Length: 291
Ligand SMILES: [Zn+2]
Picture 1 (spheres, rainbow, N blue to C red):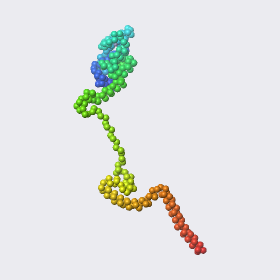
Picture 2 (cartoon, protein in one colour):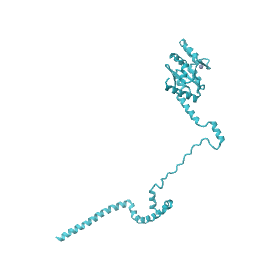
Picture 3 (cartoon, helix red, strand yellow):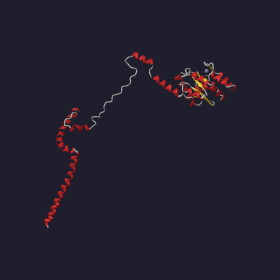
Picture 4 (cartoon, rainbow, N blue to C red):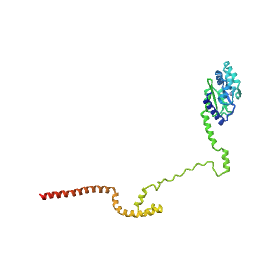
């Protein structure tokens, strides 16, 4: 067997051991079809099963399975003899069912006796894949293959692993007795988000607001040194404000500012023109007078 496959099978059997309680020797229920395939490919099950499962294995047959092969005729007498060499797994069916039906009944809903199933029946294998913890074996020509754990198996493994991390019912009861005030599980309280305000030291705009208002409470909140500076600054600012406020007030109004600016420019031009013109006029007049 390839090293890679061996590693894979080892991991697989560890899952069955740890989660579902499989122990050596592994009990392998062998189907008539599987036994027939083994004879055809000349594989010795008693030798090959321990190599595949990486542990001692016990091949078994059911009476229903034996009856099914026997019913097929004398051609399968060799298979009947081969099956009979394995251990008998008694089943309660007095009138034999088909091997698949019998196996389905033995495995039940959760494979309580931890059987492995070796069968060439594809339908039966797909049926057992829906049950957690059923190792499935089949022969591909002469190669015995252990199916990887089914989705259902992996699902229950994940569930059980998660359950291990949580306290058991007995542990919770004990904790309640020991410390009745402590609740088993409190949902974490969501942190209250405070309304976010910008860092007052970082914003310069606030300094402009107190200058427009002559009396400000915000300035008083600052440290004593800053207050003194502010007060000095205020007094200086107040003086400037009084002078500026008169000029600024009309300037703040947009339409007046627009009206003032165009007026000033033509005035300058007019003044320049007026200034220039008188000289020209004077020159003209002078020339006129000279003439
Ligand atoms: Zn049966």
